[in-house]
Amino acid sequence: MAVGVEIAFLIIGGLIVIGYLGELLSRRFTIPTALLLLGIGFGLRISGLVNDQDFTGLQNFFGTLALTFLLFDGALSLNIFEVMFKSGRILAVAGLITIFSMIGTAALFAILGMDPLIGAILGAIIGGIDTGITLSMTRVMTLPEEIRRFLTLESSITDVFSIILAIVLTQALLSGIINPLFIAQGIVGKFAIGIFLGLLSGVASILLLSHIEKGYNYMVTFAIVLIVYSLTEFLGGSGAISVLAFGIILGNERTVRRIIHSTEVENRPIIQQFQSEISFFIRTFFFVFLGIVVAVGNTRNFAIAFLLLLFLYLIRHIVVKLSTKNSTYSDYAGVLTAINPRGLATAVLATYPLIAVQNAIASGQNGHITGLIPQLASLSEIAFYLIILSIIFTTVLLPIANQQGNAREKEEKDLRGLEQIRLEGKNTQKKANQAL
Image (cartoon, rainbow, N blue to C red; front, side, top):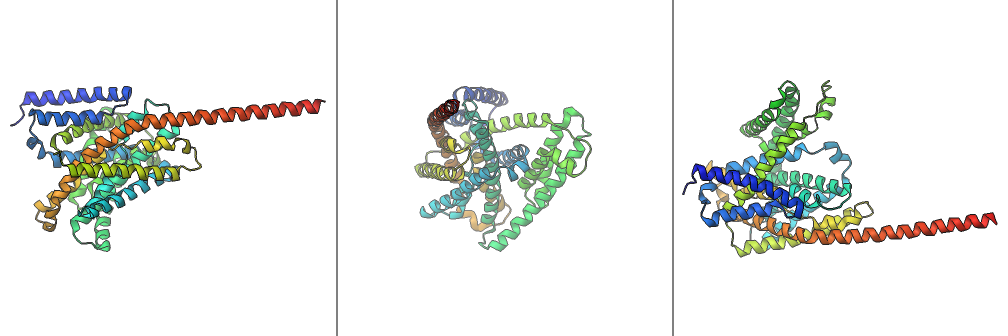
């Protein structure tokens, strides 16, 4: 049954309002909006108000759109020099957790008789924590600024890692030939075209935006993002990587202008502001969309998601402990371990491998991987369960870890106070002895 125009408008308007109210509630009660939106999507489907078959045709378009703006949003907020030169521990945590996630998930899939390469793809997809959920849950907590910075950078970096690795491994799956050299050549070619066009369009856009009227800056940028993605794909490159490179250049405009000796140095807060609102819109609709289209009820997929969550907490605990040892972060290792939610990146990327394979099959290529479609289709359901479970676990564990961290910090502060009193008493006694 097709949705009427008035019903569609009511759903769209209602979802935006609910998304906004959900953001307010998440700030006040640390209940992530993602759970509410997923529940709304699932409720719309089982109520019969919408038919999931009406939305399945949009999966390709909407999934690609969400992936594109997720990449652009993440790249726009990355300070490339800060990431490269001031975030060694954070890079270690992000990289190690993603790598171990891929290895562990591939091993689990192999044990269950499934394709380990699909397992590795899922491991890359679930390797990173969600930026929006993490920030909303820590916003109401008393945490040092360096801990917030740690989590913000980690989530941004792992988003990029997850997207790149998911694309790379999906291309390997499509090639059908386990030849590292062949795969590497194909990937490097696609990435090289994407990076070149992304960097070129980024520099050109910085110069162009100086001559665009202020009120149209973001809309022109929005158009360029879509054009860059499409043009790169037409030329045989990776549109996603091109958008990533474009966003990094635009997000580091001041540095780029110094490199190209441009005399104009401008801030463009309007772009960040509109990007934030567009990201909110896409995030709201994609979680609802996922709740509508994902088939749930497979106990095996739920068991896989639960096992993966336990594994992710184990490796996060180990990696965080080792990476933060003897640093200012070590006192908050429990908090850093407890914060482990999956969100938009996981939801979007979970649909990507299936879309890529279906497109390849529709174009008459890669018929040998048709048999893998059921396994690829299960990734969305596993991701759905994992998002919900990880948010629930984080919601429960985070206050406990924070309370323990505060108690430990108070104990250490008391010990430092006692030591200071002891030293002051010793100095007073020393001065008294000298006076005598």
